Length: 393
Image 1 (cartoon, rainbow, N blue to C red):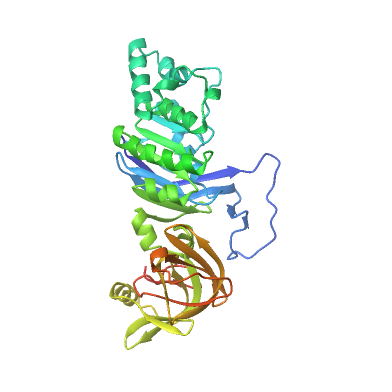
Image 2 (image 1 turned 135 degrees about the horizontal axis):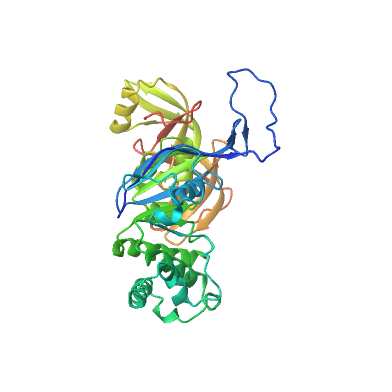
């Protein structure tokens, strides 16, 4: 059991000896140079910037974001595999910056399993306990308990090469949990599995967290994993935290354009629109229609004293409704998904996806067909053109 606190954690990779940073002369107020979306400073390349997070005991936290955003680096700093350049890391209230990885009471599951190929499943799981010189009976009991939890008891005498990807990942998890770690770190553990196995293993991890008494930090680039596994999600981009919240919070109330586009499948539709005031109430105008925002959004916009302006309007594909009138669109592709049809259309010069439940379909949609769609004032998100921030917050 453990709480984890990260205070202004920073990771800078210094330049290699002899390497100098090439930079042109610039004014003092010029923006920082960027390369490959990472900040370049005189110290080196900044991979993680001002990362602060409080993780409660037994909480399941997911770090999610595109490749190169700093999520794995953050996890490795918690594990002690990367040196912390700045800030403080506490586990159970104890400062861990200079504590060796073996003394942090953590375990880590890697993307590539990292199993010993010459050892049996039993010996792989038992390895860390043998290093501790645990009693043989204790080792046997713990290994078999972990194997039972993960349903791999029948594979204990096999070598890793005789197992499938999903079975190997179970062994890697078993090797981690057998130590009863205070914190279990998982770095994209399902990314090497096919779609069906990923779904199965997601369910297994959900069951696992109910059966073991530990705190989870889980890294993924797959927002579906993040939404289904996490108590809270930390969305990262270019080394910075973009938003922290429950899966429902970040889905319903994205704080900026990046979060809105990253969370949700298919991703949110975006339009160029106008935020106007009509009779003292906020409304959005797009494609010849005007939609008055709901009372909750009215209150937040009014509290921020938001002025009428050109905005980026966001509406999720499953929040759009086909009708006789509304924004006109031309069908480009119709995808049958079983319970629904995904219509890829062109509307207002943008590629837009409309999800239509099959029970509501009135016929077949062919390429080139004209359709009309609308949306409710409770599902419209308005973002600043300049800052890309959600104007409600």
